[in-house]
Image 1: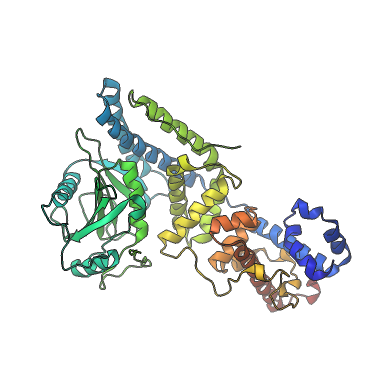
Image 2: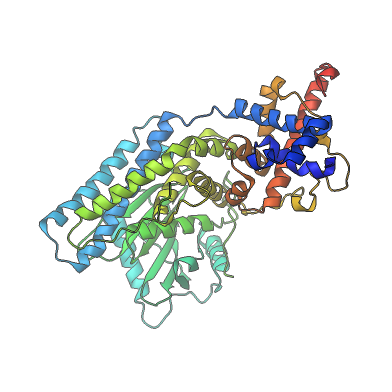
Length: 307
Length: 207
């Protein structure tokens, strides 16, 4: 075996891959070629040095606690969302009626206690808070009103018909960072967009409908809803405070809301809360179009666009 | 250990069994995933520029992993590459970066099976460095590597992932992993040799 032939074994030997160690020809070359032996030793030395320098890093205890608490909160969200479909199918018994407010109370308690964890300031809460009242009701009302709009397909004729164009145009017109994500992977296609806010706030409303035609889903981009949340409007906190609707008798629509600097975003749809949270992940990844005059220290995300 | 994806049917006689099912899933998830928190944290620190962002990245990774856990099957790669892949995806998608940033130096290493630079000459890494003498400098040099090289290097050296696992985590070709590791080692070696020369260390320390 010559040196060029041996080269492909160099990294494998440094990685102590046994099947290579058993290659007699490679080992024979290693024993009689100082240059190749030096290269194997070099790689082995580098690996050992990297382990020495970086290998001792451990997750701090506050991070461990934070992760475990997040899992608790996520599980509470699952429990609350899962209870809703059952409510439609079976008569509510006394045990079931007890579980729902307990789940809500657990989520609220967790949301409060998370803010006490060391190392987690107000800007890094990572909570899911169950809310009732005006914001949720208004989001549902606006969603229903637009879905049931007679004749029209909920689209301002002056707007483009593609998602990227919609986001660009509405962001510019409304001076907001409007999102119009591609939700086809969740089975939702664009119906249209209009300048509808909630709670009297200026905003954009992008409406989607499921492939089967049954479910509708709304994504609202509005100026910041100040009645919810403890995070300062100018903070960089994103995706760390969610506000979800409570389970209510006879109510099919779930609502998820979060803040991002001077904006708030609301997703409303006929799905359990945990399913809506998955859609929210996609919505957040999709990106935000900034109007020209707004500046943010963070990078602008790419627009999603129809393909 | 092999786990099949959870498939807990919903019971129709109230919410108690659902709560038990969720508790069971969470318990299993904690047993499978939380032991790899240190590895996930290390990689988050590798990718992020500050500790707060790294912590957020770790939290987001575990929440997403938990949500996807019912679809997870422990196959040949195990839970750690799965978690690191989620973290990698979260980092690059939430930062608005394309998942496959083409580096100018990113070439398919399969085209250069001799381990060199493709033109048949002896690779520069034949000049070795005494790695034991440069801990602090090595740490700085690693931090200055391009993120893709840094990730590949640390996944190889610290987390002990195979090239195939690294390719899975980073969502790139096997040849790309080999190329990135090769380049990372080249860059590190060059930087530390320059450092040694600047400090006027004895040339006899270099073999």
